[in-house]
Length: 385
Image (cartoon, rainbow, N blue to C red; front, side):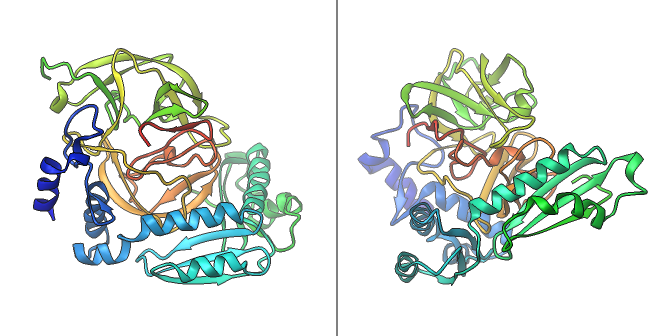
């Protein structure tokens, strides 16, 4: 496969037709319906799950195309859709609905290359679950008895779950039931249950490369993708996490030594970190460099962005790269997670110390591309897609 990809990268005109900043380490080619970038992710999933490469292809190879069909179904049936979850081994997917199972869902399930479990009459939509979670979470955040709060929901059971850390002065008086009774009236849909648990723990070269890329070096942080405004293709920004920006009006972006290590000063235009409705994100100008659709997937190698995944589901395969935490892969474990600072994040199985950070989840305000943190926007989209 590597030899075939290498040959295609050199001989296929399509591979060189749209690469404004030249060749990259993962070429913009495909084997059948698997892009070279997706093949690299499959290698990472094989390592993460302790299986062979061929087994990783069996488990996860068809998922990007399958997921696109399911996201279209999710959007078409948004008033009925209660949630979707994929098994970690890729063998099956669960789809839930508020009322009866729609005929469109049955027809879509028949067309998919994996086992599909359809469940109807749950009594809630995913949007209703998320709204209930946000009401509960915000009330607990305002409660002086708690020093830290994290909240999420389980789409299959229709349960809103919150974890609270008591403030020192309230430790003796707070328990699960007293915390739960405070917020239980906020959940008005009888099909949605809620629970609160008290926990003790908190939840260089002289070559001047002309491009600014996703995954680049922001000194004490790793940058995200480049984005364009959907209302004006000429309005373009370089993205990072809101907590990386931390209000800094300017930052220094640098390419890695493999591309010369040249730097530029970039200026903050948009930021949300504390109290954010949709994730943890910041946008900067491009400085003196040109925005491009390549991104670093480690400090030595780059690839082209070739697709997007605008909605995260439990069970999605995901890989990340961080300047300090390195590269690792795993699966999405929770979606629309809320913590002390932000709403609508997502949690992965990547171990602590290799965390994907909070920047990976920004629904409606975000479009996240395979293999890296986040994108801002129903107003913003990925550069080059």
